[in-house]
Length: 258
Ligand SMILES: Cc1cc2nc3c(=O)[nH]c(=O)nc-3n(C[C@H](O)[C@H](O)[C@H](O)COP(=O)(O)OP(=O)(O)OC[C@H]3O[C@@H](n4cnc5c(N)ncnc54)[C@H](O)[C@@H]3O)c2cc1C
Image (cartoon, rainbow, N blue to C red):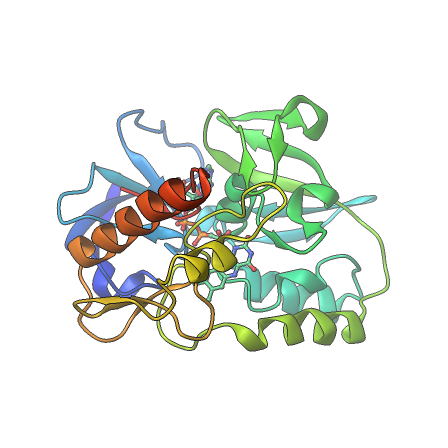
């Protein structure tokens, strides 16, 4: 199997992490079971000593229209899928505009915005080489219990790409900070917002080293330049303990720390 040297301070969206060799797995390879699978690293905080890592290779980067479904390889980037949807007039994918990542990462996170999330349109997922129907996979707000590696996904196919809907959903991103981040740091607790809680405990704009809870949106942990893993962890822990103390709510990280 091939491997690829990845500098996570460049590759990851939050621009933190070491340079490491990542195993590249292709169609037909036997997947090692002691490696952590990464996608586009848009939801990851990588420590200086991560576990052995792997990623899906080019053979999983494709899109194909079949009779009543669209099959997508899990290494395919969301931007490419959105362009494909627009070109072929496919509906229900407008929400992935500016939602950075691979389809594998989207499925694993059940990524989405508002009431739009990827599981809404999934028909079945190939996990560890077997097709599994959506109904058999436990999933919810920002989680999916895949129990393995997703290699391909079949999405229900409907026609009618909606540019206005795309623009509407893009507008919701106006309050997203421009600095590097890994998206929302914490999941929203039931009936509340992580951003509101972080602000309420006085941490909006709080900085440790070059990491901060954004002034623009408190639930975005942003890298202001040379932020480190340690700075990020400090802020995460401060937020968790203050919110627990003052609101008796346990914040759960949305970003994956490895
Ligand atoms: C600016 C910005 C905005 C964002 N906005 C949103 C948003 O609106 N909504 C939202 O939901 N998220 C958002 N995110 C977070 C991120 O874009 C999503 O979580 C995305 O789905 C991550 O995809 P990825 O390929 O980068 O996955 P990674 O970050 O590499 O991995 C995330 C998780 O998925 C697992 N994984 C990856 N590929 C596979 C696979 N093939 N099979 C099984 N598991 C896999 C990894 O093991 C890891 O646990 C945002 C991030 C940024 C930086």
